[in-house]
Amino acid sequence: MKSKHFRLPLTLFLIALSCISAFPAYASKIQVVTTLTDLADFAREVGGDLVDVHSLATGVEDTHGVPMKPSFVPIMNRADLMILIGFDCEHAFLPALLEASKNPRIQHGRAGYIDCSEGVIPLDVPKSTDHSEGDVHPYGNPHYTLDPVLTKTAVDNIYKALVDFAPQHKAEFTENRNAYLAKLNAKIARWEEEMKPLRGLKFVSYHEHWPYFAKRFGLEYFGTIELRPGIDPTPRHIEELVAAMQAQHVSIVVREPQFPEKVPQRIAEQTGATMVTLPIMPGGVPHTKTYIEMMDYTVQTLAAAAQARK
Image 1 (cartoon, helix red, strand yellow):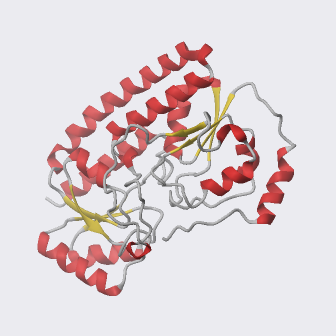
Image 2 (tube, one colour):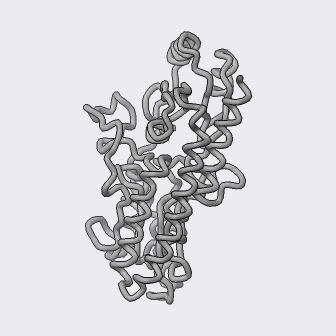
């Protein structure tokens, strides 16, 4: 699924612009817009009753190409904070929406523009950004929130943004952040224990979502079904991938809900691997409304698949 740079169509902009006047210029709560659902969950946890949070994504979209809707523009127009994953993840849709929003508070470089990747050391920074290599991210792989430890950096960046915006509520934000991090740390300890038997497990996925997850839990990320980022596989690539998986005894095929099931299922059948569908953000599959629920699902699904193969 290839994401592309494009500008907000004129008709979409005009429709959205006509809606802006329907909303008040201010609200009693801090208006927060996030690009993705995991960031929305963190903002709600830290902000509590003091924030009104809207995610542009619902959980089932390609993180690199969330479809733009006219309703996004008035929501962003009244936003106090715009929170994004960063590392160029949202390059295909966010710049055009920011331009259309006509909201100076949340433009790049302003206080309301919150890049949650600040402080994260990226993996997979490409040596070349030539388009022949696919839809590469020049700043590195943006899927760091699939590592729950790195997720704490995103939570802290959101906390700092809320404190900067409303310092009079620092005590509440601090209490909320600390409570959430305590809960997350307890879960991390449990997830690491549950994943111990899977150390060294080899797996492939459709898109390169999983390097941070694999590194955190000691798995071997064998490769992707995509030919290159954003470029669908060719028959030859699938044939070579199947042969390599058979030779190296790769036992798990991860299919993200954003991508069709047919090709991953066929590869699993040809290699004798087990296919699992894993979400990349909350809401990607049923019963994963929060980040912790999503990670619980991911760890338990992988553990069950590995156990079933013994």
